[in-house]
Image (tube, rainbow, N blue to C red; front, side, top):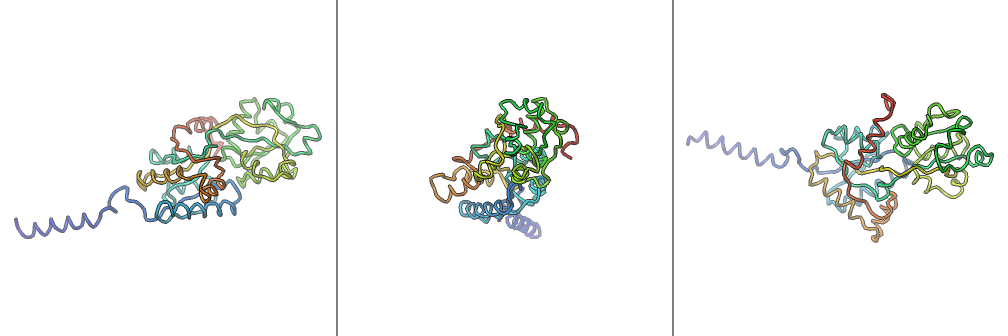
Length: 303
């Protein structure tokens, strides 16, 4: 064999081995980046996410960095555009990410409470005392009272703050855009903004994530009591993109599932994320019902 051929072959092998594993389509990143849906107070979210990043770094044996998401759409787009590797999303945005990922995005884990999540309808205490509204066993009973009430949702992309309460109102024969004296939604996207608006009397009735109301102090709750609880639905999840490799995605899932409520450090994280006992494994198909509700909205509503 000519020397030139031998040297060419050797050079090719050296190039190949120098490239591995970075030339593979699933090369593991040196650092993981994650984000969180911005539907709670930003300071609290940043604090909880920073603590989680430290814990994940310890458990995964590689740097894990938290990057703030400015809005709901950005949380999804950042995952698809490779600005982050995994993200904490609500039910609707989980479906948005799965669809936008075109087979490359999957649910990694969900909280035990998210398989039977719910929305609270709350009302201003003075409005209740005046007899304008009261506890509702059937949401349809709101229909005859709505014309005299102002109402607010959360962000249009919020599952518990907008999508599902809109769905249940519609099922009850109530058009939320027409039935109320005034109806709108919180531009901030925060469940806290909805609660504050009802507490202050800015609006009479609102719909929000039940967990946010439960975390409020007794004085706040007394100023905005719950008047109706929706049927259960699936909601939040950790979602990842497979460009970082299925093996690493599996390790992330395992890390969440292994957080132990009997371990003080793990329990602090579980409490911060509103987990009752543990994170659970989940499949994309469990969010199909949320996709159906999302797609039942009038064309262009979410634009």
